[in-house]
Length: 108
Image 1 (cartoon, rainbow, N blue to C red):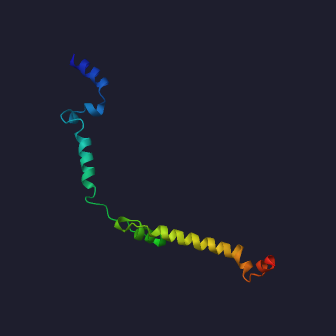
Image 2: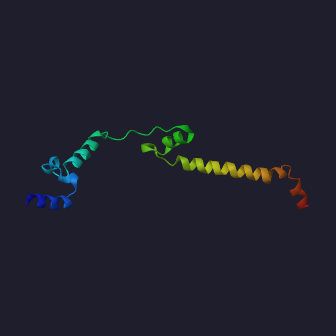
Image 3: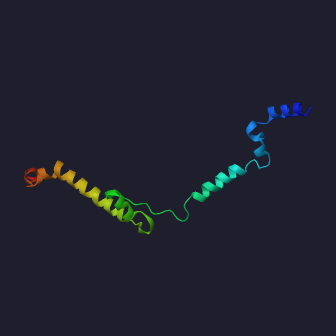
């Protein structure tokens, strides 16, 4: 009779769980040990600051990161837009009016 009961139980319980070594242990103990081992292997403390390379990286580190954050990049942007727009104006329009002769003839 016990053979019939074991046979019926073996169909309900997967073989990995029903093995003799796992019957005495808690079902989640191995998994919990793996999780604990994973977290023990992680580094402790604050993450190191990223090392920025290149011109844009150095600019970002200087003006945007940490306690150095400031409004200086806005001033840089305004100056850059002014220089670009003045250069375009000069090359497309102003250099043709250097002597002012066109404007003097129009007034007479």
